[in-house]
Length: 391
Image 1: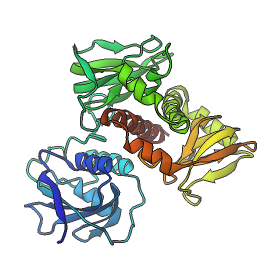
Image 2: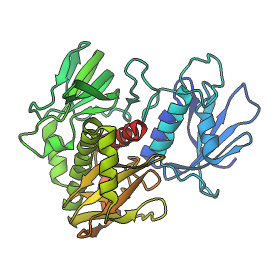
Image 3: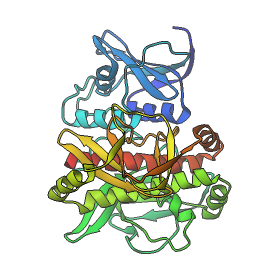
Image 4: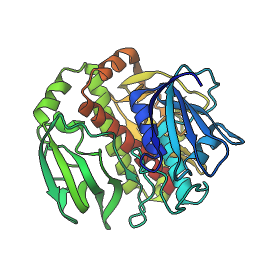
């Protein structure tokens, strides 16, 4: 097959979730070819701008073919960079595919193929397999950039790194180990996430507000090695961004906090009652049938992001003036119309944001700042998935 092989290796050392993350970060276009000594036919996944659009694995095609390949415990892979002419049949987002596939592997819905049937099919930078002790999936970040790390810290098992409600503007990147994120409830701490290598403790909001209150508690699970980031350099980079880009980033951080509030604070009965009230006298802006590939800034009124589950609509977050919604060109956060709907109050007003300008700004960010942005998207996607699964 024509094309330039840009990287190759073994699935034992780099799993399919890691590969998806790498291709997405680099926005690669081409075909990922996989071979397995236990199967006669190779698997192929076709990518365009970092997103999977089609696949072949034996008699399977499209999304089912991709899911089956996550069951390969070992084998070889190579990515050929080349123009792609195949039809786009996969509509799911990259992050959603990884999360669904890893869950199905855990549940035995995807057959494991290869030596060592109990092996995980790759660590998964975007989303690893479920942690059996805590019942939460482990989110991992992209490759660590050491440019902004000014100090390294070690926290022992059970040691608290930050506490919800306390103030502090430090941002760490996890160099190794596992951190549990929890929120306070009337019944005690409730774990909402487990994050690993490449993820951040602290968000972009830390760069903006001098008095910044932590929205969750982070605790070391085992020994955790952290890298302290240079806040002044990051704040300087943030200050050079356009007003639209700043609003986008703060809106994403705010959406993550609202999703966590929804996951922690709503009982199932309240969710159903709120969903019924929410849909009354509102207009649908985006869903599976009304997908719009644009990005908007809210100037008046309210926008509601609701999950689309087999049991109906699930309220996830309320967006207000200066919040942003729609298609973000460089973040995969699981809030595309395939999984969530956007409805609006009658008085809503929005302005369209120039996505090309936003994308150009993003392309000129340093790797660490890009990783911070991507980390928010990954956490939004994970929290949305947890809320929908609970519903």
